[in-house]
Image (tube, rainbow, N blue to C red; front, side):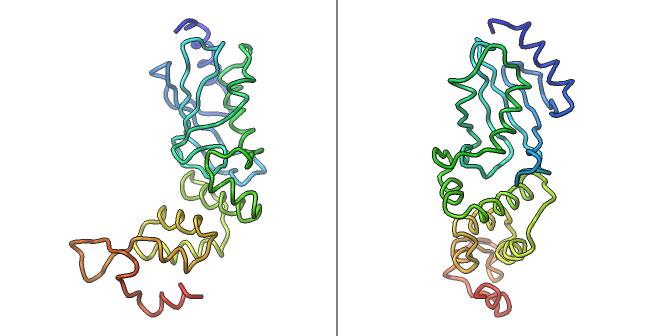
Length: 218
């Protein structure tokens, strides 16, 4: 690390910042920060744990971000990798780690669906802005401890997750099929009540109980 004193200074400033929570700075090459979702966006009320990878030449090179908390965002890949021009071509040595965290909140406010790392999120945002925002709210609730929700989406999520108890898989299936309940039900693995040893079978080989099937078909 070429400028350890600058890194120490910026880490200390970040620890004192009330807007973010510094969760781990034992390794100055990779610190962990909790970033609140931007107010006024579908990400608000969520808290996103993010790794900041600090390069050797910091602050003359930008830190890299990796979201550890799962997030549905066109410019953040499914594995948490972030694509932000400001942290590459537009980075200035006068920027700090706090500035970098603010960039993440700006990214939540202004996602760009035209250059997506998450193709599914980008496509949904372009085609149906309202569905995209509602989907973000649901992902934020499930993965980032958000408090907002939509009753109709909650009901669909409850029905699909009842097939195997895996709410994350149910959420991904519904998202992939534009919240079409029937289509999503064909894509999840479910628990076979007659075969506890194998536990998981394909949907097409399982007969869904009548009451639940009625809800799935509705």
